[in-house]
Image (cartoon, rainbow, N blue to C red; front, side, top):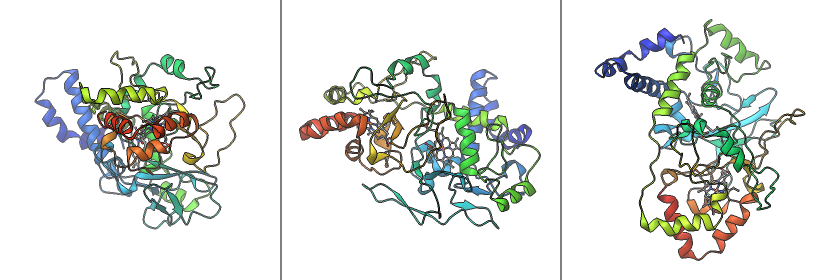
Length: 381
Ligand code: HEC
Ligand code: HEC
């Protein structure tokens, strides 16, 4: 979709914003509103009468960002669990929908029973493992890019030199496995793998269909515009929308949550869930994460077979490594952990193992009353 088409699509927001003074602030309000419209709009199958909205698929998991991140991730959606794979035929994600005329990649069902690891029913023949990922909340995530890299590096201790059992290493800033360096790339990846829309970050109009999926390639080529489906401006506006979401504000000063806050440190949770991170913008980010990868043990590991890292390259996250989940606003989440297996804070903590096993033991061995104080503190974030 070209820049001019996006502008046309967003003109109705312009009339509201014109009432404001012509300042940078008005422009960013306008961009955020246009970005929100793009975030919520349903992409359609090409060719459509409105070329500005077409390009869906050929394979896709949802028609809009909001389909998986309702209210920017404050809500829960059934489509919100994606299936990450690494397959020569099926590509990087097993999409569960295909445009009319194209058979779906595989008829799979994610079986999700609270308290258990979700699994795939009828996985595609020959599939070499997979990794289920729940759509995370997006409030505040734009600011992860602003966190001072040198500070994160100072928190990392990949070889556990201080022998506290907690190591942590720096990957990218985005995704449950910190696989993606920046917000624009993450949005480009979502457009491509989740919705099947090409953009300057991920230009393929055929999205995640591989050369061996010839029916998919043929369909995409037959309907493709010369231009990419989502322009650089679309990416800018989506970034502007996510950056405009107000940061979660911890309920403070809450005297009753102080003992819980103390226990959070005493149990060793702050070794990874670092309360505050310095940012380039000056204002610290109270996300309760170090944004580093930690090995949380075999119980939380996925089964995806990863290609060996090229010599000299930084290894990708291993099956058991996950980026420390930010805990701000955690009380509003109905499903926790990377695949949504936990529905209570207590269950999420009890899944911690590996580098977090010492911390989990402190929690399990504490008096019931102390655990309640800690949970009360988490709910206040
Ligand atoms: C099919 C469901 C689905 C759709 C549609 C979708 N997402 Fe996501 N989103 C996810 C999942 C799952 C993850 C976690 C990915 C991972 O860890 O590999 C994610 C992660 C993200 C993240 C990173 C958050 C973090 O904490 O690191 C951002 C930002 C994001 N999505 C934005 C978007 C935008 C913008 C769109 C629309 C262009 C979109 N998503 C569409 C499911 C979806
Ligand atoms: C060694 C690092 C580490 C320590 C120590 C640690 N955590 Fe975590 N925590 C993580 C990681 C990594 C995840 C994401 C795991 C996943 O999704 O599979 C996580 C996830 C969580 C979640 C789920 C959040 C969500 O949105 O899904 C909660 C709640 C949580 N931790 C609380 C705690 C508490 C309370 C403690 C102390 C008793 C603690 N953690 C100690 C690394 C740690």
